[in-house]
Every structure is written in C-alpha cells, then in structure tokens.
Length: 625
Image 1 (cartoon, rainbow, N blue to C red):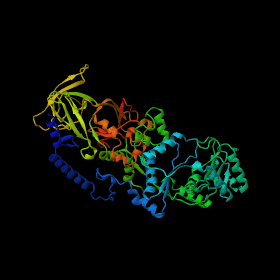
Image 2 (image 1 turned 45 degrees about the vertical axis):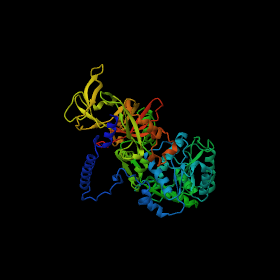
Image 3 (image 1 turned 180 degrees about the horizontal axis):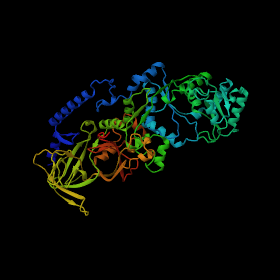
Image 4 (image 1 turned 90 degrees about the vertical axis):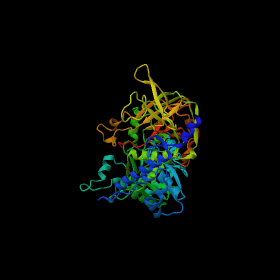
C-alpha cells in the first residue's frame, strides 16, 4: 500500500489554480490553454486607443524571475542625477528624524540613498536629524537602525546632527559677521504679516534686520545663555525677500527650546532648525548627492544659498517623488490614536504600514526592495493601492518560500482502509533545491471543516455523504461513508471515510494534515480600513476602521514539516537580501505557503509552547480589488 501511494503520487502533479492532482500531460495541456487565453486577453488590453498607451509596468514580469533591485539606478531619474555629478567617490546619507517609527514611504528613501551609493561603489551615512529634543526618544533611534539593517544595508557611519552643535553655532556667528543673519523678536502674527499677501500687501523685513553685527552677536549669545524664553527670540537668515520662493523669506536658523537633549543634556538652550542644519551637515560629511523628496524642492534654493554664503563645500541636492499608500494611514498622530484606543496591538501591529509592522507580518525585506524598483523613481509623487504592494509580496513569496498544508478549522476524518505510510513530499513543486519532508499517514487525518457539508448540492465539489474528494499529495480520493454530530446536534464532530478506488477522477483536491500535526493559532489579517481614503470618510478615519480586519483561528493545525521550516529559516532567497544579518532565527523569517489558504509567517508573540502565525498575504488578489 505504501509503495502504491508513493508511486501514484509521483505520477501526478498539482494544478495550483484548481487544486487538482493531475497527470503531467493533462497539466501541460491546461497550462498551454491558460497561456493562450492570457495572451489573447493581454493583446486586447494593449490594443491602441486614442490615448497614449501607458508604459508596461515591471509588475508584469514572469513570477519566477527575480526583479533587478538595481534597475532604478541604471536608467531614468537616478541615472541622470549621477551623470550630473559623476564623481569617483559617491557619498549619500539617509537623514531620518528620530521622532517616530519609519513607514513604507521611508523604505523608498532608504532603498534610494543606500542603493545609489552601493551601486556606484560609494558609501551612505545614517544621520539622525536630532535637532528637536521635544519629540525624540531613544526607542526610535534603535528601531531605525534595526530596520535599515533588516533591509540589507549597512551605514558607512552613524552620525547625528547634534555631533555638530558647536560647529553649527560657530557658523551661525560667522553668518552674522557676514551680515547674513540677525536676531528677531517678532511674534508669529508679525512674521505672517511680513510675508505679505500677493497682490494686496508687499513683503517686508522687521526692524531687527537693521541691527549692527555686534548687537546681533550679543543677542545671539544671550539666546545661548538662556536669557530668552521660547518664542521670544530666534536667529533668522537674511536672505532675499524679493524672491518668489518662500524658502528665501528670512527663514529661522535657531530657536529657543526649553527641553533636555537625549545626547547633550541641558547644555544647550537653543537648537538649529532643519533649514540651517541639513545643508551644512551634508557639507560637513562630504555628501556628493543629497537625495530627498520633492516636498523639499523649494528648499534647494535656501540649501544652496546657505552653503554659498558661508563658502563651504557644496553638495548637490536633487528631489524625487515620495511614495504614499492608499487604504491606510501613515501619520504618526493617527497611528498613535489607533494604538492608544486599542484598535491595534501596537506600532508593530501587522495591519499597519509602519516598517516594523510590515516586518512583523512577515513581509520579506527583498519584496519591499522589489516593490520600490517596480514603481521606479521619478519626480512625480506615487500613491499606490495596497493590492499593488500585496501583488509584489505574493510574487516574491511564490518563488522563495516552501509549501505546507494547514487547516484553519480542523475536522477529524477516519479513513477505514488507510494503512500507516510515510510520504515524501517536496517543499516546492517548482524548486527541487528546497528539498523534501516526510508526512506520516495513518487512518486519522484532519481536513478543514469548510471542505465538508452534511448535504450535497449542485456545483459543490468537496466532501459530502456518499461523495468523493481528492486529498493533496495522495493518488486516491476518499469517500464519506458517514459522519457524527457534536452534542449541540448541529456541528459535525467527525467524518468516516474510505478510499474511493473506482478510478473516477475527483473534481477537486483539498488540503489535509496528519494526526501528528502542530497546533497553532492563526491570525488572518485583512485591510484595517474599509475605504481607499480613510481620511475622507465622514467623521474621520476612526469611523472607517474595518471591524473584520482580524480573524483568529485558535485551534488550527499545520503539518509536521513546519518544524523543519522553522529550523531552516530564513530560506535561501531571503538570505540574499541581507535579512539574515539581523538574526537568522527571527520569528518573522519562518515563512511558508499554506496550500489553498494563504502565505504565513510566525508572529513575535509566539512562545515555545504556543505558535502564532500571521497571514502575510492571500494566495490570489481579491476579485473586488
């Protein structure tokens, strides 16, 4: 019997679209038919129209071909940026503010800055823009460093804007000496008036701009000494208020803050602004290409003005379009509300699009890098639907993780004529290098309760009384001979079956697990919000929360091969992205495809006694999307 099952299984192959086990010849015919159908549909969709045809997206590449994550540096915007300044020593930086957790939009900035330097044989610094002690916390510094490492990048140096506080102060005094900065005592209302009103009221400078150098130096030193309270004095750069760009309208360079800094303590009473700090720190670090998002495009003129005014080394700033995701929220304030009101478990909840949440859900870092590359880099902003992100993740997992059988709601099935048999099952039908594992088949197996009905009906092809269904990896279908109900008289407690040896081909195949399977808790995640634009919903984004964003299956079973998957994680392709650098046994690296169910990863809440699995992404895109 054992030999017959093994031999029979070897002659059949899984049709992944239908779940059928069919002969190699039949599978070949089906695939050819589908390919022809897909080609016809594609030809129709690409037929010329009055509007210009859109460029073919990278997402249409074959699923089994990895995306070149360096493609964005070889052509297009980033290639042109390099050619503007084709220096031998490329030096970039990623400059996050340590005032919150990074989100999916930051992944693009990380991939661009670190990837651009690596592609050109250069270096990239991680520079914390820590000039606002009122909002910075140590937990954010740590989380940012871990995420960069997880994505496979290593900073040449880890620096802080605060490393340069004394040097920045000295240059602020030098700017005063060059009559390009002054201490101002105007209120917010007065400054707003000074900015004018186009066509109605001209712009003008305040009277403090006419102070002499010595007075400004004295006042600035008094600011440093703590003479002034917050908002009563600040240093302004004396730029060009006739320029049409607001970034030249005498921006603030220093302000007074009554806050203790995480690195410098209470030694400073004044702190430099982003507009004063960023360009100068780029200069100090010898940055060749300062790459940032287009929200800073107007700031380029003030960036260049400051470096020229102080006659320091001048980096080149260029701007690319930022990445946004629809169907979720990325604002720190909004996520904090979701966390504080208990809608989600924390900032790393798998339903959030913080990078720590995406990581916990089980999304591989390599999939994120492929996503960035598929979108490309231009000066236009990009808002992407969640389904597009899921599509990339799904394609990446398809070729990189093993497959196991899992049932969410186990239903016991007793196969009366089954004999104990060891089945050798491949981890992947497409990649023999993933190896095999053994399943111990006995009379008792478990199927998903959703695959059994007490009464048959038209169009239903799974198990029912007197009806047969195929079991994945087995050549013989099983036929239900009877079933028993639980004490409530409604729930099916168990099913009795026998092998169907009639030779009739079953309409479909279902997954099953053996008696010695692992009990796990499965958290099935759906979109956190019901609409594409939660902020536009009447009453605000909190009114748009999806009450069915999480469904928990506390008694799910996964086949014993899971233990080997856990021991070997992360699997070979994942290691190539640098993921193994952060700890090869990390729970989220234990990933697999639950056949006919979804892709899963182990959750960080798991313990040796209790394994929890998160759904990473569905097997197919939902038709509604």
